[in-house]
Length: 387
Image 1 (tube, rainbow, N blue to C red):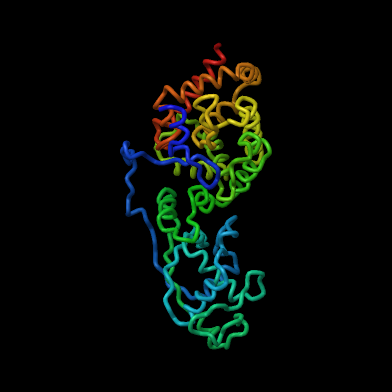
Image 2: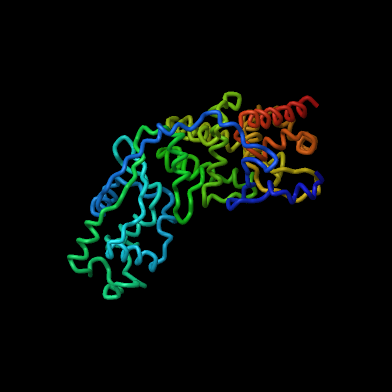
C-alpha cells in the first residue's frame, strides 16, 4: 500500500476526541474468538416499581448518582421536550423503563433514563437553577407557563404518586457483565463510550487522578493539544498508560481490553497518595520524552517523512509511553541523540511489518496484538541503543 493510500485508509479516520478510530475487525478479517463466553446467569437484574416521590427523595439524599462529571449531558433536553415529558406524566402515559446499577449500600447509578430523571427532579424542585415552567404543551394548555409550585395540589399529587418501572442491576453482578449491560442498554441522547462507563462504574480517587494526568501541560504538549477530553478521550489515554504500568503487558492474558482497563481503574482506587504521585511523575517524564523524540508526531503513524500527519493512535500511546517512562536517563539521552534513526526504524516497521501495523490498527485488544506492539517498540528501542 502506498503512502497516499495509507493516508486515506478508513483506519486513519479521526473520532470526536481527536483520536484515531479503532475498528474491531475488517471485512476481510473474522472477529476474534470469544475466549470467555458470556454467561446469562451472571446477569442479576430485578424489577421494581417506585413512585416519583421516592425517586426524588433518593436524589435529595444522594442515594442516586445521576451522572458524575456528566452533568453537561444530564440536562441536554430543551424546555419543550422536558415539558412534554411532564405532560405525559399528567396524562398518565407510562414512561419507558429506567435502568440503574446498585452498589452494596443500595445506592443507584443511572444507566438509562438520565434525561427523564433530571427533568422530573428539576421540575419538582423549583428552587434550583435548573427548574423550568411548562412550555409547548399539546393537550394541557391550561398549565402552559406553570411551574410545579403553581399547579393545583391534586396535579402535584398525581406527579408525586406516578409509578416508574425500574430495572435494577444488582450489586454482585460481575464487572465484565455490568460493563456489557451499560454498553447495550444505554439509549440516552448521547450514548456513553467505554471510558465514560468505566468512570461511572468506579467512583473514587481514580477519577480525579486520570483527570489530573489528562490536564497536565506535559500531556498536552506531547499530544500537540489534539486530544479532547469532552468525552474522556484524554483520560482514556492516561488510563491505558497507568494500566500497563500497573499490569505489565506480559501479564495481559484475557484479550478483553475493556475488562483490563476496568481492573486498572479499580487498582488506581486502592493506591496510596505516594503511589499515585509516583505514577504521575512517571507519566510526565514519558510525555516529555515522547515530545523530545517525535516532536508533534508522538503516538502517531508516520509512514514516510512527507506523508500527512495522522491522529493520535491509542495503541501506539500505550506501546511508546510505557517503555519511555521507565528508561534510565543515560539510555534516553542516547535515544534522543539518535532520534532520526529511531524515527527511521519506526517508519520501516510500519511499512514492512504487517502484523505490527495490524496490532495498532485493528482488534487491538487481543493478547497477541498487545504483545506484538509492545515487543516491537522494545526491539526498536534496543536496536537504536545498540547502534
